[in-house]
Image (cartoon, rainbow over all chains, first blue to last red; front, side, top):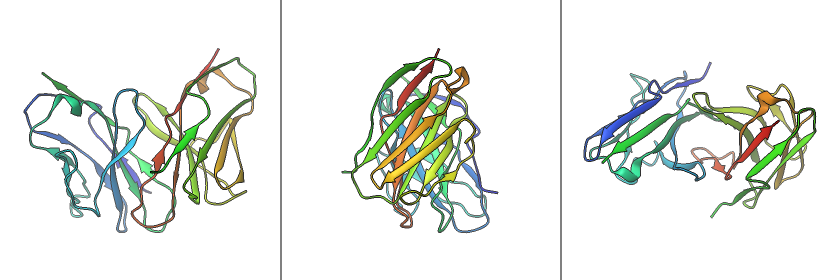
Length: 109
Length: 113
């Protein structure tokens, strides 16, 4: 069965420190993977998707099929990065998305 | 830009009431979804629909039903509200195309007293 695991409920870092939000998935096929972000009092919005291989707001995520991971990374965290982050998987040719339980990132000044 | 609109940001209802949450999207998306969002539990799928009048159960459908009479509108119904249905409810829409994301509404914070 498909599953997305975000092992950290809360991650606190200081401004300027590197940050890595972990995401592991279980799926036997080729997954479509996404990171979503929800800032305080805002709607959940797409941050990036693995197919794009781009950097958004300084964040990148690499799909590692061997480790079945899609960790989100940023070399220098900013206070405005404080938010809730969700990793999501969509199995190929499925309409349904599977979300992790989320990681709250707190960037301290 | 995709717009997913949920009819209420905040709603307070009483136990036993029938509650309707409405969601409208303006991008002609085939798929629409209802989730509830609870601290520590993330997003849990209640129901989704991939076409008009079609629906499929998600992970936690008990106590809920849905209606999709028009492509742009997806309604979530709490048949007889209970206090354990107090939560944030998120509506989303998306296409069936590969690697296309879901787009979310602002959410409805529902309190059942």
